[in-house]
Image (cartoon, rainbow, N blue to C red; front, side):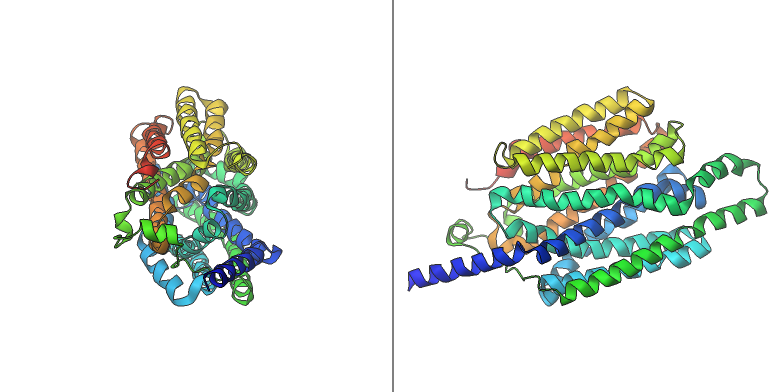
Length: 434
């Protein structure tokens, strides 16, 4: 009987592995990660663009990232309930439809040039992404061997960052950035009526690309709903994990998960600062927006290079925790390099932070989820809440950029990378039976 049970479990695992490895399943998950990247990294261009169109300070403009990423903190507990009620696949469809509602708000926001409406749209987009992230990241982590989870997430990360590379370029084509540069130079000498008319016309340019986003999100929602994407039961755990979790009453009994959440908070914060501030930072260095619009793409390309290295090297040549150590050290070096230089060289260091950040997400997730068994959904929900670091730290950067300078504000990243180094070295082992 025991042998039959074992064979049954092996058959189920093999069947799931076959389905999850099918081209259809990988195309679906890859498409979702592409959408994560495309929608997320549009913010890098929205920050300087809305700064002009809505006449904002640096600090105010970084509420773009705050509204978007704070949704992860507020929505993560709701995300768990959505996935428990609808399952992974249908929950993803609900999330995509919710995101399309957020994109729709950009239409009245652009027509009225009301910054709060833009922020509301970004919050709803972030809310949908919170559900998608809660479902997709543990999905990718669970469906294969844990020691190669970072490799699978790296593959999905390439889809994400390639989208991030093209997103600001595509949006920049619609926003006519050469006119934005000229308007910023001329606005001080305009009459009130002329300035208002020019800014209204500028704001309206975001409508066509966001209509396209609405359509794509709706089509993806239908595709996912009708797909054969398999469900994953994260409430089951093998005998070894179950034995080690005896006496565990909640996810809060796992210190390495709590430290992982804070590590993810810091990581997302520095990643968003590197990706979303670089266009605005380049502009502050006297570089035209028509050129600066490519800087986020450079950051994303750096991340893709890092992901490719991860796919090749993890776990064959380097363990995922050692990759996290190396990346955090590189993050400190490049951050200091950006602060100590200026112009294109300084911008290049910020872009190269993409390389430092590339393997952090793929490594933190499996390290934080290791050994949690039936608490996986709850742990995943907490980790998604950690994405709120993208709301808090860039806003702090914006405040420092106003009070100090955009250049010196990058000091905020150094202690963040040092804590990530601690988690890679010792933090992920705290409270675990290894």
